[in-house]
Length: 312
Image (cartoon, rainbow, N blue to C red):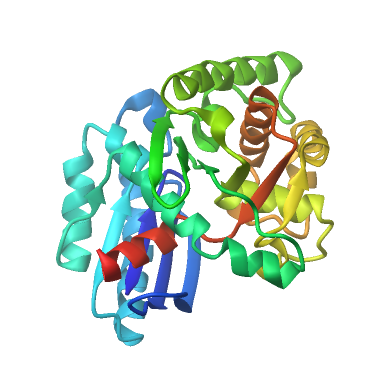
């Protein structure tokens, strides 16, 4: 199965062998930052240069999936594409490359796919770390570029909500200086808190026994908190990061210059400009929901797409 996740900031590929049940086996993972959502919050349109950046990477992904023997490909497009008035132009480009258009999914389906992917391997990850498996119900939080998804569930999804706060969107709205001013940070925090009111109106977050964080913001914050000398997915997957460490990392990232963030050994170049906003989202939601730790999952919507594609 080949799964492609096209978000506001990055486009990612997973090619995996997926059995009828049990764990799937990764054959290939790749992530490229194309910033598809460049300026979409202000203009309402996908920029032509952003569509072209995405097209070039998508051509490579299609070739890699074909070479690895993928029998099915599903591309899911999320926040930036949902919001764009010219999304038909983007969909036509995808159809020309893949032979079919993307599934521009609503936020609730995005949340469900993230939940399926994030929770499928938590027990095995805990075993690898020699720790107890996190307890259900899980509140899975997927911090993206344009939106953040919240989904509560255990064996099934109980409730989900997507809100328009993400690391790219908040950076473009508020965090304009390098580093951002205290007032810019305050406005970003207010934006996040207002969105969380919408979340708690629909998702009973207090029922969650474990907070599970997925996607690049959370994994990067975890890598910094763990003091890793280089990005190590195995060390990150299943790790538990206490709230005080999240607060410390977020404060440091928001106080750092772009140059210092770029020099961090675990930092992907495409996250340098937006990681401060992403860490702020994680810190505020943990404080507002009273969570003392976040369980970090390297598996997310990509894994959910592949699993659903194979198993329905």
